[in-house]
Amino acid sequence: MKTSSIVSVPKINITYIFCYKMKSKLWLFKRLYSQQLPPSPKICIVGAGPAGFYAAQHLLKKIQDVQVDMYERLPVPFGLVRFGVAPDHPEVKNVINTFTKTAENPKLRFLGNMTLGADVSLEVLKKAYHIVLLSYGSEECNQLEIPGEEFKNCINAKRVVGWYNGIPKDRNLEMDLSGENVVILGQGNVAIDVARILLKSVDELRKTDITSYALEALQKSKVKRVYLVGRRGPLQAAFTIKELREVLKLPSCSTIWRKEDFTDVEKHIPKLKRPRKRITELMLQSVNENKVVEGQKEFRPVFYRAPSRIEGYNKNKVYMKAIVLCKTILEGDTDHIHKMRAISTEDEESIDCSLVIPSIGYKAVPADTDIPFDHNKGIVMNQHYKVKKGLYVCGWLGTGPRGVILNTMNGAFEAAEVILKDISEGHLTNEPKGGFEEVKKGLNNQVVEWKDWLKIDKVEQEEGAKLGKPREKITDLAEMLKVAAS
Image (cartoon, rainbow, N blue to C red; front, side, top):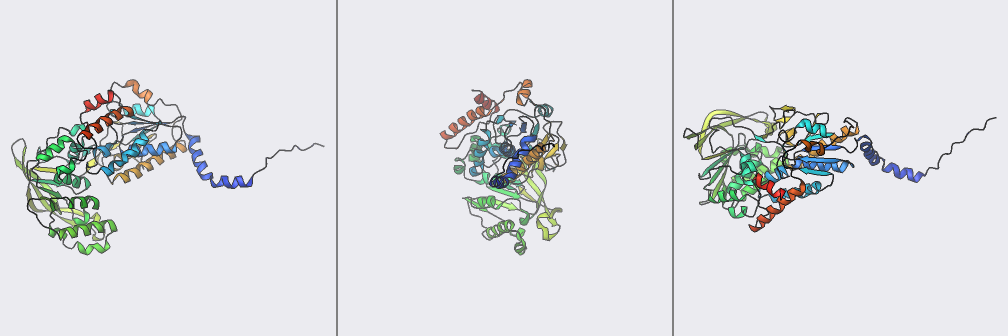
C-alpha cells in the first residue's frame, strides 16, 4: 500500500489578507504598468508649453523607470505661460514653479533650440522613442479675409502679444501707435488683454516683465480710444468676468457701452447659468454708469458688428483711415443663446482708426510632413489624443485653441492616461530605443539643456532687477544661445 505524499501548505495569516485586500487595487494598478512596460521606456514630448509639462508630470508620476525627453523649438521653456500670459498677470505665471520641479526631475531632459521638421524629423523621433507626444501648440492666426487686411497697421493680436511678451520673431514688429483710435476685432480674453495693455498706465506696466521696447513705444503712444468689436451680443461675449472687471477698474479710463446693444438683455438673466449671469449683471451695472470723462482714455465695447473692409490710401497700403463694419443679427434658438449665430446685414457703419488688431483665434500647422493633419480644423487628426500607434497629441494642437490653463492641464492628464493604458495593454513595441543619444547623431545645431536655460533665466532676472522688474527678457535668439553656451 502506497503512502500518499503530503504537500506542506504554509499557514495563512487572516489579518494580513485583510490588509492586503485593502491595498490590492493600488498594488494591481502599479503592477499592471510595471509588467507591460518596455525596458526603460523612452518618451519624447515635442513642445515645452503647459500641455507638454503637465503630460510629463503625469507620466513621471505614474511610470517608475522612464526617460522623458522634451524638445522645444526655442532655447527657453514654458511656451504660452512665458509668451502668452499678459505681463500684468504675474499670478498666472506662478505655474512655472510647478513646471520647474518637473523639469528638475532626473528622469526628464529639456532639449531647447530643437525644431521639429527642421532640426529633427518625426520619422527620426519615432525610431528613437517608444512614444512620441506632440504638444507644440497653435502657431498661426485665423485670417479676416476682407479687403484691406493687407494694410501695414492691420496686425494680428498674436503678434502684438508676442511683441510685448518678448517672442523673438515679433521683437521687431512695427506698430504705429500715433493715432487716437484702435479697433480690436474679437472679444475673447486675448482681445481684452491687448486692450488693457494699450489703455493701462505705463507706470504700472514698468513693474512687470513687459519688454523694454514695448514699454518705450507705449510711453509715446497717442492712443485714446480702444474699440472691442464682436459679431454677437453681450450674452455671447467670450471674455471672462475677471478680465472684464480688470479693464472696468483701470484708473483714468472710462468704459463706454452702446446702450442699444443691451435691449432686452435683462429679461434673459433669470435663465442664465451662474457664470454668464454674473458677467451679464456686471455689464448692465457698468452700462448704467456710462459717462465720458474729459482727459481719460476710453474703452468702447461694440456688439452686433462684423468687419467688412479696411479703408485707407497709398498704393502700398500703408496709411489706414477707417474700418467699415456691417451690422449683424442673431439667428438660432433663444433658449440656447450661446449657440446663436451672427448673420451679416447690408447696414454698415465706419469707425475712424489707424490700427486694427484682429483677435479671432489661432490655428496649428503641421511642423512635419509626416504628421496626419486636418487643415480645415487646424489640428492633428486624432481619436481621443491618439494619432496612431506610438504617436499621440495633446493641448491646442489636438483640440484647437480653447479654455484656460486649467483646461490644458486636464487634457494633458487625459492624454497621459491614454498613453499609460496603451502601455499596460501591450500596444507598444518592447524593442530597445536609443532616445536622444540616437537623435543627436544627426544634429548640427546647438542644443540648449536645462542647465543652459538656467543661465538665461539668471541673466534675465539680474537685468530685470536693475530696472525694478521681475525680469528683462532676452528677445534675440543669437543672444539667448550665446548666454546658454557661456
